[in-house]
Amino acid sequence: MAATVTSKGQVTIPKPVRDLLGLKPGSVVDFQRAPDGGVILVKIGGKPRPSRFARLRGHAGKGLSTDAIMAMTRGER
Image 1: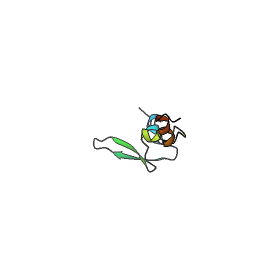
Image 2 (image 1 turned 180 degrees about the horizontal axis):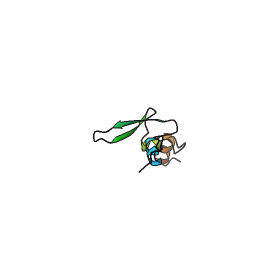
Image 3 (image 1 turned 90 degrees about the vertical axis):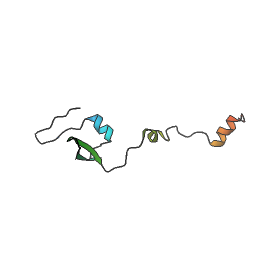
């Protein structure tokens, strides 16, 4: 992904990169020099992004209790 530097030295971070790093307005980023001479963009502070599994936790809503599930598997309902 390419971006153009303005006359003020500003660059718009492409949306896929903002989404990947979880950058929102007001987010603080750092530019670090990589061993190969490149530059790495790093988000500073904030909470670490939850894993894809953690993001799914709790989305099923209220379900059956363990006792109700056990009763169903035993054919008691």
